[in-house]
Length: 110
Image (cartoon, rainbow, N blue to C red; front, top):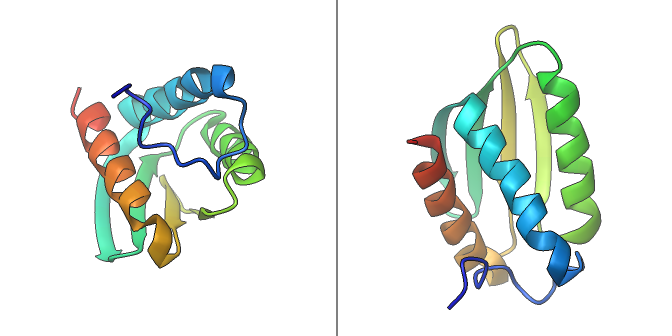
């Protein structure tokens, strides 16, 4: 099983580009994650530290991810010092959200 085996077939990002996209998310979580919660089984809530260029970086990554992974509903909510990020899925993609949450925790703790 590869490191990206959890990525569902419904993702339209070309396979060779997936490691690069995952690396972008990993870097964001390593650098900016301040908290992660699971308020509902089908939704993650992340708080990311704001800073110069952070909101633009998050919005760009969210837009690109939404373009290839339509099973995610990702919304941002900029705050005073944080950028809120909500990631939701339908019931069929709950295992993907589980895997993503585990990956975020692992990367955010580095």
